[in-house]
Image 1 (cartoon, rainbow, N blue to C red):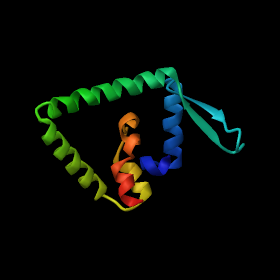
Image 2: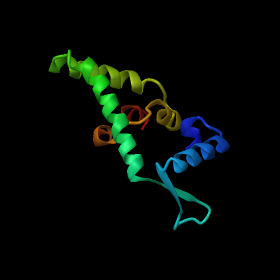
Image 3: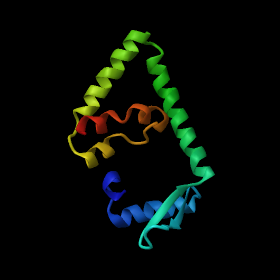
Length: 117
């Protein structure tokens, strides 16, 4: 995670400590590897994600609602092309798109990650 976020190990630990303190995630020991900790998003964390995604959806809808269907598809194709040209490395691909909308992107896969496979 620290590589994806561009944080040091200690910075990632502080971030997780903050998220846990705010009750957005829970830490549990891994059943597969005693040296590892698994993070689980809490109900409160899921609600926060929904609010952030809804805010982003509202902002992007204001832009996209002025396009007709053909323009929207052209715009999407151009954005995917632009994003896919930003890197050829998996770890950097994960840094480019923050807070993906998993319900949308995962159906077809992330255009940035797909471009490097």
